[in-house]
Amino acid sequence: MSEDNHRDLSQKITAQMDEKLEQGAWDSRQKIALACRMLAHEGHSETLAGQITVRQQDGSFLTTAMAIGFDEITRSNVIRIDDEMRVIEGKGMANPAIRFHLWIYRQQPDVNCIVHTHPPYINALSMTGTPLEVAHMDATPFFDDCAFLREWPGLPIGDSEGDIISAALGSKRTILLANHGFLAATRSLEESAYLSMLIERAARSQILAQSVGEVMRIDPERARESHDFLLLPSIVKASFALFGRRVIRREPEVLF
Image (cartoon, rainbow, N blue to C red):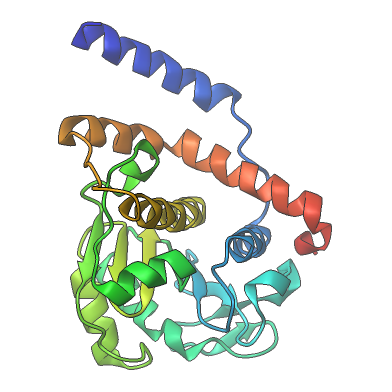
């Protein structure tokens, strides 16, 4: 297939997806609750570690109350805080670890949602100082888009940790944090949650592959094409909607 034909076909497919794919119709608090539950089901929240924040147009942030696990979050557990982490709406307190989120928001005005968790396979990579490899189509959303912080700066509750992590992230969507976990910082809640689901699965595949042989990286040009396609808004939102419907079938109380 010629390059022109390939581009024309890709544009037609993209237009069809924009029109026909179901993308969900939940409000912001419901989407946060759904994201928490879908991530919990993948092992992202075995302890109190992990946070989701979503920037609002007035400069406040939606997040989850501290000490409520991702696996038990509902819409009513979502709180709103200001940029000093004071609660404006809702009960409870914000997780003090989201202080480093605020550093990223201040430096990157296009970022509207941050997800940070400690899932098991990502943890395993982070403990060995191993970056994420793009060696499978499903990992291509991270091609040239996943930073790597090689040294743990300590608990992310102070300003120095926020400065270090935000600088290491740079303009990339995700970062693997040595001895810590990972972070996704993107334009939307759907995109950050989608990448959070994918990165743990990519880490799992990488560890399994390395147990049987040498990992073969993907051709950079093909990886870039796949990266751009799999991060189209229609695919991101349709994927989030799929994960969300699975949550609702298991745990319908999440929406209330």
